[in-house]
Length: 351
Image (cartoon, rainbow, N blue to C red; front, side, top):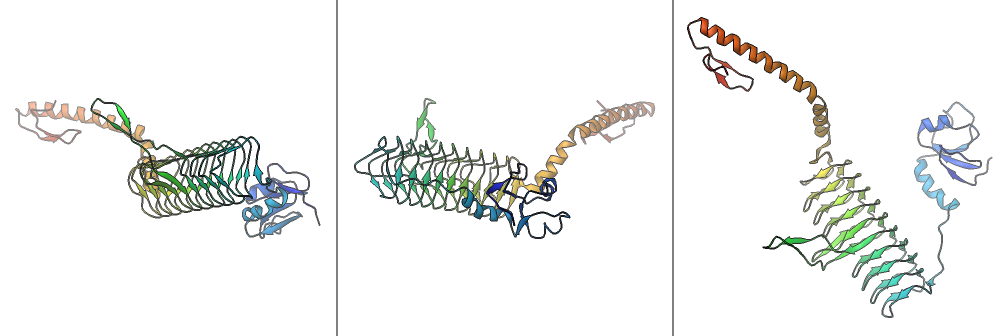
């Protein structure tokens, strides 16, 4: 028997803490007296006597165990004295509105919603039940947020989309952005990420989608359900992401481009054309991942190929002179050949 007071990483073992391990090399580096949470069969095959628990998937088990040792901080319902709530706003009796928050006219705050501090909720915005909002989040007028969402500090929902048109004098004229933003249920948006309001219709983020820090979703974009958008991803206006699409770090989708269901954009990929459902693409412009790897491999050989090309050009130049000399010796008889560019020349035209 052993007692456990918390969880830890294998790189930072702590006394009476269960180390969560899903890579064998980490297990081999751990001291034998550290209890572990590992996949089935690992303890018996490790070759050492070690205390621990075997499960099908340690990461899933960790998700279930974390609340046992790190309980969620619960806020007592109510409105902080420094918060400003308009008389025409609706705040559920079980909600918490923290210090210096502002809730405008017509806004609706659902049951068990938590606004931590200095959050802004614009006119007629709606926040669904159970949603938690970290400090310094802005939800502009008309934004609608579903249930059980989580928004981290610096998130802005419903800022104007980036829309301008050039007039006859060459000046940029702003296109009014009068649409809004709709966020589904169980959506999480990381710190300093933004979702712009639509020009006329709405920008939509589907239920279950998770966005990392510093992600931007442009006006009128449609992001499907259960998508993953990793840090520094950018979605241009009116782009469409199918359900389950994954966009790795610093990837991007051009305006009006459609990314199919369960498609994957590798890191730094730029989709300038539609991406088929289930496809794995990389590079810029984004193309089939295997093809992109072949292109990258060929690109790495360019210096060598250039040296070979220069050597061939020198050989062709020498051969051309020899042919010219032969032509002269044979009394000017024409001798045809092709130069390095494939252009046919005669013995009298060898420059």
